Structures are given as structure tokens and as C-alpha cells.
Amino acid sequence: MQPRYSHELQPGDTYEPLTFVVTPELNQQFLYALENFHPRYIEERGGLPPLVHPVILLHHTPRTRSPSYRLAPGMGSVFARDRTHFLAAARVGQRLHVSWRIDACYEKNGRPFQDYTASITDDAGVNILDRQMTSVFRMGAPA
Image (tube, rainbow, N blue to C red):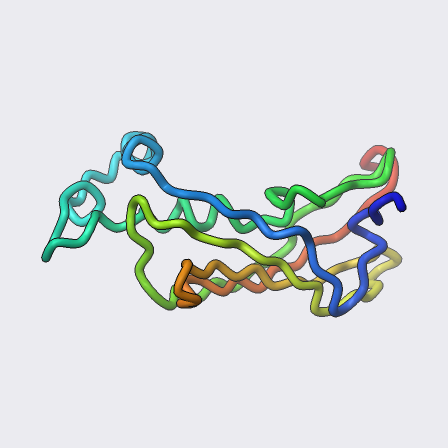
């Protein structure tokens, strides 16, 4: 069976999850790009690895990161809005899991919208981040 396109998903449907590990090198690349060299992102503290920079977590939550994300030919999708809640610290070297769930589908101004939630948890099930996002789909070239 061919997987469905993203615009065909309905409330309660999910995308395939993603597991990733933030290496010291990946964290460092983001720190250089952001010119943010705060010690909490570089040094161990209290025997714990450095913190993962929050932008890395945001970078992994758009549904386009899911292995099952698919757009129909000729269709585009635009990120419309989000609300993010950071709930716990993520540490360099920690395995993290992203999951996505469709919350609502509706039409506005003749265009299909989709609200979805992305969540990041660690191996212990601790919820690191919840992010509610909205995307709008569009067929063809922009007017």
C-alpha cells in the first residue's frame, strides 16, 4: 500500500517517528552558526553533559523531518504558525525521539490547513518539548 500524502492525513493520524542523537560536533556547529558560546552548551556541569541548544530541537520538529512525510506532485506546504513549550533539558549524547500527530484539518479561504503536534521525548519517556504547528497546503505555482 502506498503511503498517503501529507494533505490526506486526518486528525489522529501520525507520521513515522524520528530518533536522533545530538553529538558534540552537531551541537558545536549550531553554536558557531548562532554565535552562542554559553558554557552550558559546551561544558559538563555537575557530571552531566552539556545542554543541547534549543534551536537544534526546533530544527528536528517540522514534519518534513519524518521519514514518512510526502507531498503530492505539484503541491506545496507553508508553515503558518507555531507555539512551542520547552519542558525539560536535552543533553548532548542523549537519544531523542520525535513524534508527530495530526490534531485538526480544516479549510480557510479556500485552502486546506492542518494543525499538528510534534513532541520530543528521551529514552526514559521524559517529555522534552511540545510544539503545536499549523501548515497550509497549496496546489500549483503561487499567484
